[in-house]
Image 1: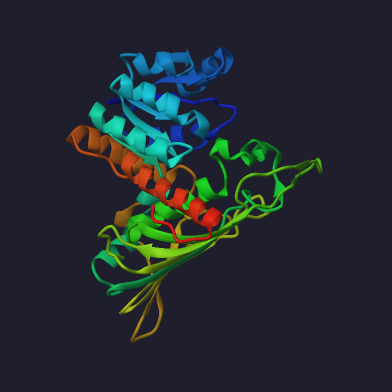
Image 2: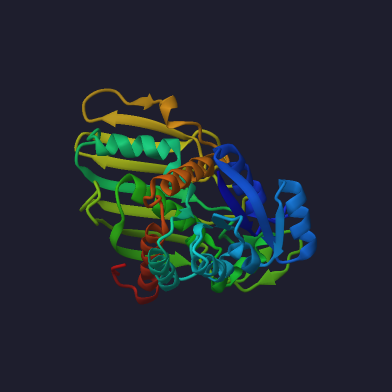
Length: 365
């Protein structure tokens, strides 16, 4: 049994209670033994709500405790580095909510320290273990589309971006918060593409930054320093199955409470695979994928994701698959996927997107 401590486990707010705790409970092989928040009141409430034996104010006591094998870092992105480094110094396995850090340099630094610590490390990028993504990745790897020639993605990132901002997202308008359309929805999109065909080795980007934006419900106008919409083109490499293929990514911010969906298209010498969400209002990282195959010769048809890939829809379903992967990695003494190096590569691409937008020139991550 792997004993888990969750940093950022406030049961009244935050992502841990919505997604991570249900996934830990569903994955099997875990025991939630400790929780930590920034206040004693919420820490006690979390321990009661989740049945944890220990509660802590702040991460320090939790990461050092002998009854914790795996530390889950689910605090705000700007606090990821501090909590993660503390866990690594304590020699604990670590799973960090996306993004790993606010900057690509910090993400790369954390990955290096994690290797030195000799622990299992993973990043919570749900799309990597999505049944739809794993199914499409296998189809591409076995040669269904032939040689990959082009990949395109168009999706929405509402409520991030756009000219309106929900009151609970006003803190994300500063780049240092690390919680915006580029870092969150751009990051999840890139991790999904890396799972399918590999990573980008060059990018040319444009980014719009609507400012000021209007706070929904109050009409207050606030300055925004983060991306409202982004689009970039590039080329895939790093030895993936999409090596040399061209790619295009467009993530639209907006003013809806939920996204309008996404369209993913992989074009090869033998045909085109597309993926879209089965239900509206879902992001690529937790949607149930509708997969369609259009061969060069023959009629297009839907492909059902086999039951052997498991169920995957909703905010915690794909995290359940990730927790099972982490448990297997700990048991077998091997790296988990996606890990901190995956995160650092993707955050390197996001940094290249920002440099390209700023300089107007093609950039290499």
